Image (cartoon, rainbow, N blue to C red; front, side, top):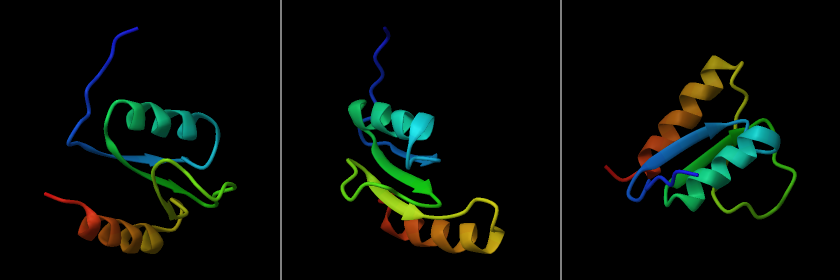
Length: 75
C-alpha cells in the first residue's frame, strides 16, 4: 500500500465520529496530519484528533464552527 506524508498539513473530515469518516480521520492522523473531525455527535471521550460537533445540514452552524476552527489552525 502506498504511504502518504501529511506532516504539517491540516485535514478536515466530516462524519468523523464513526464508520468510514472515523477510519479516514485515523488514516490522516497516521500520515502525520493535524486532523479536525466533525460530526453531529461523538460516542467516545478520547479521539486521537480534534473534534467539533457540527451538523453539515445547518449552514449557520457550519459557518460558525468553521470560523472557530480556522482561528485554531496555524497558517
